[in-house]
Length: 247
Image (tube, rainbow, N blue to C red; front, side, top):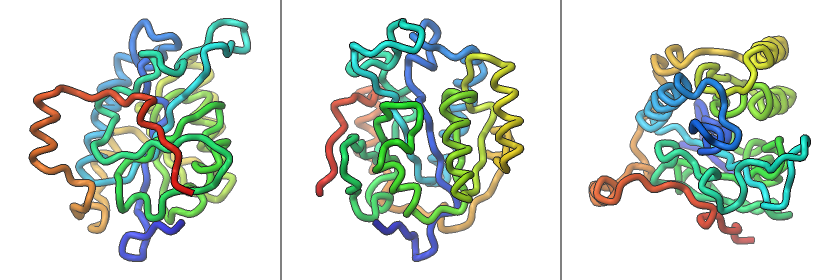
């Protein structure tokens, strides 16, 4: 699989980890504790992503109904539940959901077709999905920018895993949810020690990207699609959108 914009790759790619109702809404099955500040910040970052036409990789935490957590309690983001849905503003009109299976097959030049690729995540590690692993290995990206949930678990694990592959990683700290502030602070120190760049949303949204990221390409939504979206209201991503890639 090759991914080149004008043969030069991408300045950056945003990784959106588990921005789902169970984590991001009060009363959710595993709600993070900084929701009041997290949601406005996520909206601001996503607006910057859309304005600059930055490609996005999103993960959907996905558990079967019979699974239990390590403590023996029911687990969150159960397949088919309302809590598994992504927040509406984190869903891009030009998107593709790719199912977990044992193949490495991905659509060729996927970011020429869509702006957002969504992977189902069955474990803590997004890279355990071989298709996600392959995308991060083969798409030429200068910098990976991580947002989402949770800072002391999924975000840290992915940041350190990609950093171990000599990738340039930036975590937007105030655009990440967490359950324990002390553990989140420790995680940030651990990431910094490994060379992960920690910045705030203010630093991100004032950044100016190079010209090739600001060019309107196929991701741009036609006026007819935009009018339909306003008429029908926000469309929540549903697990039914997942489909297997063509071999």
